[in-house]
Length: 314
Image 1 (cartoon, rainbow, N blue to C red):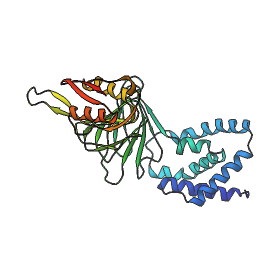
Image 2: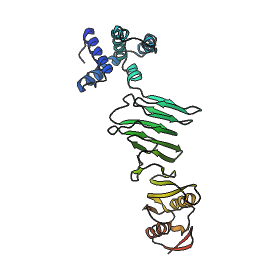
Image 3: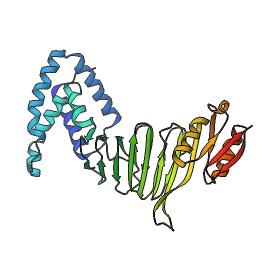
Image 4: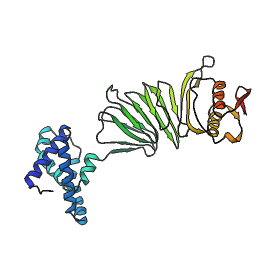
């Protein structure tokens, strides 16, 4: 790389600083120059020099990051000083550039719930043990956050900027709504309170939820169900009604376990079909129809013992 005179370097960094303040994007050429510059600086620095410089810069940066109610005049007066600090940051091989400009913000709820207000106005309540990672680019055209653990989201409405929660093995996409994400080991659920959401998980179709609906995978890969919460007219109690249940290349044995554990449906079947892989969509059917469909897939006939017990035979 051609060596740059100090005055040109200073001007270049000041230009980058101005872009950061105005939130304008850097051009492709500027990013390339910055990348080459970083490589050149790192090549000419020894490890002990980098370590010593990091310590000095940390000390020198402290006054610039102390929160205080300063006037715009104060800001302008210190702009050149801040640009000089930025120059030193870049010259240290991008170490501080990453930490202060690019390193994601991480929020953790240690032992109690923690409420976070994001820059777009969305409010996230992290439940105990949860961790939320927000990139420095947030909010962008697409608002993306990463979640580990459980959280309740109240998303600021935007018709043109989707809000996506990327969790462990699935994601939830919204425009503005209130919902809860729960992750318990392999088991994942999304409860929707207001608005609409789209939940996607590998191997199954995207599910669109409306209020009082829950998406869950029962802790099984390539499995998804949508359950509707309704009020029983006779008892007045809340009941759960199955809206859809999808399996994609899941063993027959595991499907039988899901039906028994979650819906009280007992199905007796020959062991030779236990590990046979099944793909089935049980959307909008009665249990009699659902069991008939599953039996047909594995080449068996159905004999019904009572409302919740079935026997599959050749």
